[in-house]
Image (cartoon, rainbow, N blue to C red; front, top):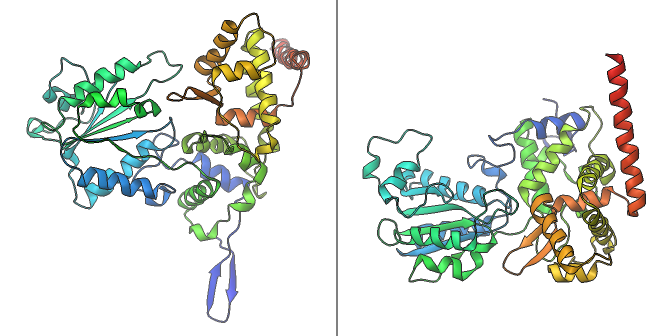
Length: 418
């Protein structure tokens, strides 16, 4: 593999870092070093960047807490909860501080019902694979790790607050008896004490907050990923020239509570990688480079929406683009504040509120803080807003008509050629 080097004196030389070419970036983002495409498997220690504090706190909570302790990891989807758990438990097992069978992973959506015995829950935790060991009845886990404790906005199988309370209460029956520690993993609804107190712990819960994604953390994660896939030293790779500062500010917007997350961000970079030509040109990712993709995605959402939702979408684009180019923090808003700030004239406040919830549940363009009841545009919506000029409804309708007409003409041409 060719390496650029810079001499220092007669005997010492150091690597001179450089940005990737389009071809290298394509390979690094499309060649996925993990089974699910965006996650980070625990054996690749170098990928675990930016959560060192949470790593130490969770390690301490799982190894030093008294029997009857409840540990809570409550964050939005995609922030790295599973990665943190995988890395911590992998290290504890490999260092001999715990055993694999000491940790019982249970999906709260499928394997936690009141009529199931603890023995059955242990058995079902192996299903559909791997095959349970012959001595599975003798296993006595110390930690019950309960996952998927979230509302899952917009999915067909939602869990309500009472669903979460009921399932945590079931798990609480085992706490201090069959298991020493109960770890609850889900979204920010778990910050609600009315939900987690039903576990019946005699101690205050231990909360493990994750640190937000920052530009520096993202760049170091990308550098480690590039080095791993391209089989280079991280010191050979210079990420800074590869990402335009305006794009980075749009990708990780300055919002009242963080809405950018590692999984969503890596997915965006993978989309970019799949859509660039693998040439020898050096990578420079800007809003201009990705504008077409995100503009088209916005047009698709807009064209499927009803009249009132279209108007609200246009207002949200303008709201983001008018926000001082990210120099000041964008404040989260309640549905009532959104309705008050939005200048559009709807038939009634009930219709307006229904449209806002439609954006959250069916289109998924608003992020919700369930405890405070506040909303912010999702990470990807910031890229859409930067890619779509602030147009009037009539201008947008004309643009959609022109785009659809071009599609129809192309389809007609193909039909004639056949």
